[in-house]
Every structure is written in C-alpha cells, then in structure tokens.
View 1 (cartoon, rainbow, N blue to C red):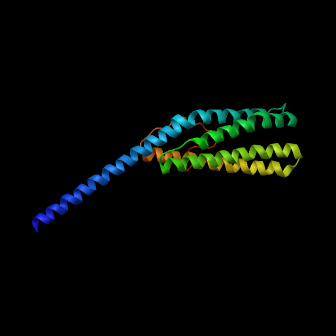
View 2 (cartoon, one colour):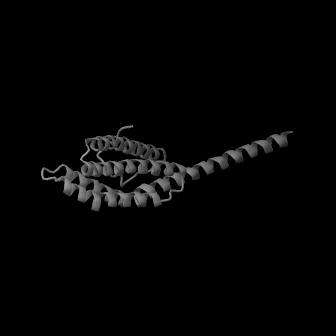
View 3 (spheres, rainbow, N blue to C red):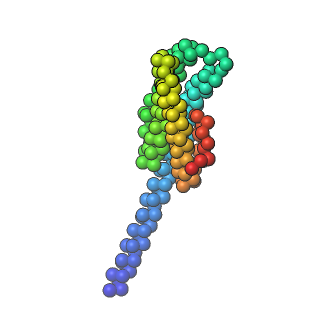
Length: 178
C-alpha cells in the first residue's frame, strides 16, 4: 500500500511538472507570436496605413481642399493603398489563438476605416449628406475598434511580459483606454 501511495505521489508530481512545462511553453509561444505579429510583421504595414490616413487627413483638413481633387485622391491612392494594407494583414498567419484574436481586432478596425473612406468618396460623388454622416459614424466606430485592439495588445503583452514596438496609432485614438 505504501508503494502504491508513493507511486501515486510520483505520478501526480510528474503530471503537475509536465503541465507546468506545457503551460510555460504555451506562454512562450504567445509571447513570441505576439512580438512577431506586432513588432515584425504588422509594423511596416501599419506605417504605410498610417501614412495613407495622414495623407487623407492633411488634404481633407486643408483650406484648399476641393471635393473633386479629394475624390481623385481617395479613388486613385488612399483607398487602394489602404485596401492593400488590409490584404497584407489578412495574409499574416499568427500561430496562437490569442494573437489570431489580435489580428481580427486590427482587421475589424481597419475595415471600418476603409468603409469610412469609401463612404466619403460616395458622398462626394452623390453629393449626399447622409453618406458623410455614415462616414462620421464609421470613423467613431473605427476609433473604438482601434482602442479595443490597443487595449487587447497591451493586456496580452503585459500577461506575457513582452514589450511591443510598432504600435503606431492609425487614427489618433487614446491607447490608454481600456
């Protein structure tokens, strides 16, 4: 009976040690995957997306902005470039479920931003004030979606003791909100 108890204790301890190693390995995978996704893969795409949005913001807020020129800029440059950025993010293949969720949050926010840009172009074409309101609503949704993305990145980075660079802020949202 004593031998059986000793064997059970050894088996249980071995099982706990194994579970600890597996969970540590999993945490390392998330940390590595998160750093790879944000710091390496997403950083360059995000810079390009930010430059595209800045180009729109600079022109749209200019005193010399002409709707027909803005439409041409949207159709010829801003929308296609932003679509390309989204496609590049879609092609990234995070390995862990946690980082796949981060990718989904980023894509959700980016798609809302793209939809807002497209609504602005529609508004210019149709001269429809409702399209501009829809674009404004989508911009608000975009800011909320990017805030969720940043918050989840921050939480995941903290939970996995990693530092993230390349966390460029594409729409000027408050990254400290949670």
